[in-house]
Amino acid sequence: MSDRIILLVEDNPVDEELTLRALKKARVVVARDGAEGARLSLRKRRLRRAGLHGDASARFAEFEPPKLGGLEVLRLLRETDKTKLLPVVILTSSREGRDLLAGYGLGANSYIVKPVDFTQFADAVRQLGLYWLVLNEPVPPAGDSEKDVS
Image (cartoon, rainbow, N blue to C red; front, top):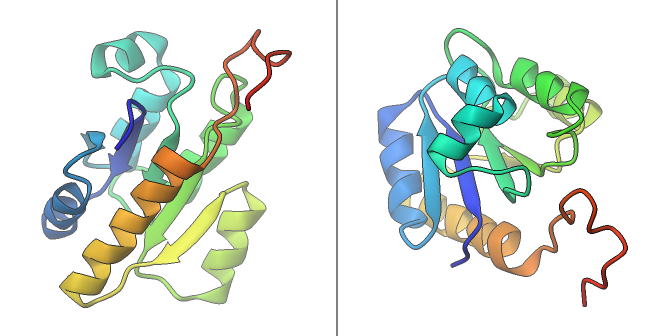
């Protein structure tokens, strides 16, 4: 799909497996809770060890991983200079209006409600991967803002 990397923060092993199967051609690093996802996103040494860099193109977070919630992870990402522009997609089972508003209010780039049906779920994740890893133009790395991205 791309040489970009997705950080998947997922505490549900079934959803993790379904997502990994749907993104089989993408490079995915899995964090099993929000705290681990935040550590991978915010610590440069861990980013390098996991194969993630400041120009990583997508971060997936869900709302209620143990230890640190998805909104708290999003807040941390947006408060930190090196991660504040990273795309964040919230992939959640919540259809609550307050969750939607909170996610966008904290700077999420997209909010997707997980389809219950396996085929629809896999298709939604594949489409997400296609958009964020192939079609979307990522923010250029620091110092490259003057370069033409066409």
